Length: 71
Image 1 (cartoon, rainbow, N blue to C red):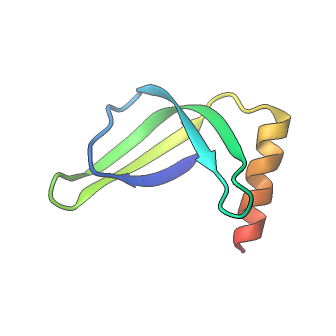
Image 2 (cartoon, rainbow, N blue to C red):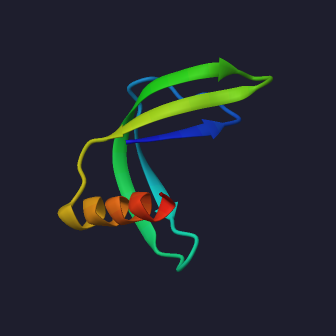
């Protein structure tokens, strides 16, 4: 899954697709998932937690590669 900040809240259990773009080479990765958490307020922003529901092996390998590159 992924956690990110947003200026607007997201409804819990909302299904959505996010597109992640890598900084070094600009590759894009489309991930489908469900919002499992949203906390915060309109003054400080919202902390969104999303779990991916269906990742291909290729997408999972790309996410793992991004994660390892950040270490």
